[in-house]
Image (cartoon, rainbow, N blue to C red; front, side, top):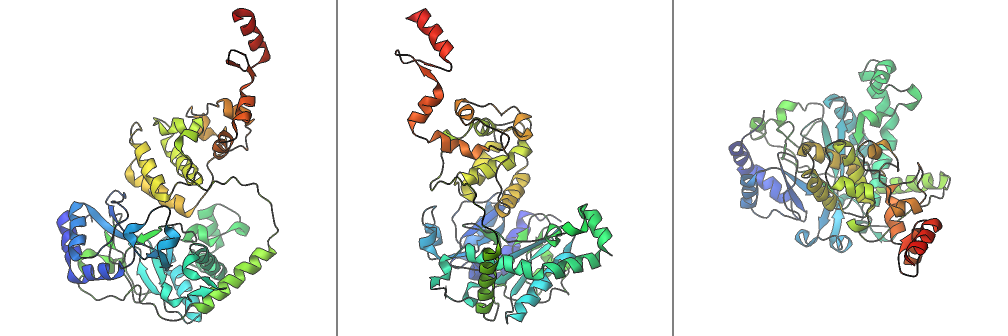
Length: 443
């Protein structure tokens, strides 16, 4: 059931709810989200109860916290992450395609694994169909291999998540098969042979984080269900009714960030596992194109420029193209989001904001390259229009638009060579024959 503005003001004004938000927001960047999934201005923080109420009256329906801790969240820019970051929490996001019961199975396996390391993590309901599990930064050692752990974000966090996924993978698959009454029923959901069954197709366990990564704050609403993202004392006994607006205010709840234990052994085992796995993998040299700075729009290929002008057809397919291309151009997640929403305003008609938000969040977790040149995503909507640089690159099916700016930034001599044949009068011609015709006609 959707809530009205007054319901939200009443809920977030409650002394316990506001107190929890303020306590947990300390040293974190805070982002307010609107009902359509778009974000309020960033960076932002919460300091007083009135900050919360003012944002809700403005239209904010949920609050999101940064995984990272900052010395001064309001001073964050694209250039000072390393300088301001003082730590980070391991927040594992579990989201099930099958249902809440399968999320419970996954969460319990992770909690059990952490328990073997002497860690009792914080657990909360995500607000929809999953759970968040928290191991605070305070439980980890300050250094590993003589390096400050705070500066090892997101690499250390990704290694920890991959290690946890590896440790629970086989057991999770067995449990999922059991809940669905056998392999056959599970295969029907996936439509792939048993040898390719992957439990993380059905239940996603987050493994990728970027700078300024956010998660739904404890005691914040989820706009898709209007249920509260609620810390839970026991996974088994939790029910969706516990997270309803009216029920949350009636009970006390555990501290999501109040985990206990020592995560040193967990981190050491994860690092050792990663090092061994890396050593065992064959070294494959992959040619990479990389730039240190953000690539400006004037260097974009024709296909991307045409998409950015706005579309009538192929809008949904182009969201994938844009968000992955911009990410590869060293645009920050915030810049990508802003550009995608700006582009959407030019579409005829625009896509729903909720669709864009879900795609952007998926894209942050699943970082891929845009489709290769001549792909139907470009050809079918009429944006595959190679220019001189494209032709100079001798584009093939395995070429990718991300290479275009690299070629465009090459020295002018190569571009001149690419243009073809020059006349002494300064004009350029693509072929020797056209140059000869020009000379005979004009000179």
